[in-house]
Length: 142
Image (tube, rainbow, N blue to C red; front, top):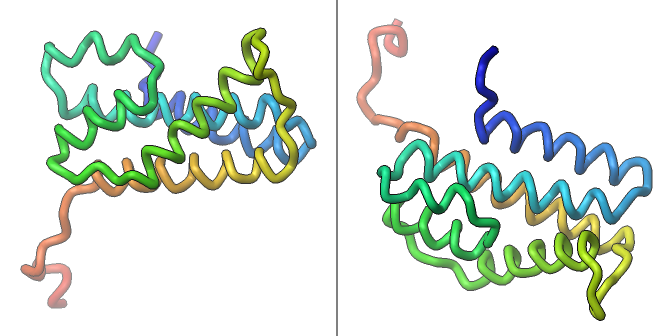
C-alpha cells in the first residue's frame, strides 16, 4: 500500500473545505482549511528540511511551521501572512474544541478561511516549484 504524502492530504483537505463551503457547512470548512495549510507547510518541511525537522511534523502550530518554512526557503516572514495563519488557527480551535470562545463560522468567515488557505497553499507551491531559467532549451527554440 502506497504512503499518502502530506501534499496529497493537503489537496484532499482543500477539496473538502470547498465542498463544505458549497454545502453551507462553514465550521468544517474552516477546519479543513487549517488542515490543508498545515499539511502543505509540513510537506515543504519534509522535502527541504533535515532529520532535525522531524519533530516539526508532529506540531499543529501554523505559525511555527510557517517560521520554519521561511527559514528553509530563506524568505522574509510576512506579518500579514502570520496574522492570516493565526486567524485560521483560531477558526480551527474555536470550532473543534470546547472553550469559552466557541464560535460558529459564518459564510464570510469561511470565505476568509478559503482565501487564506488558497493564498498560503499557492505560496508554498511557488516555493516548491523549480526556478525558471532564462536559458532557452532546444525545444523552446524550435
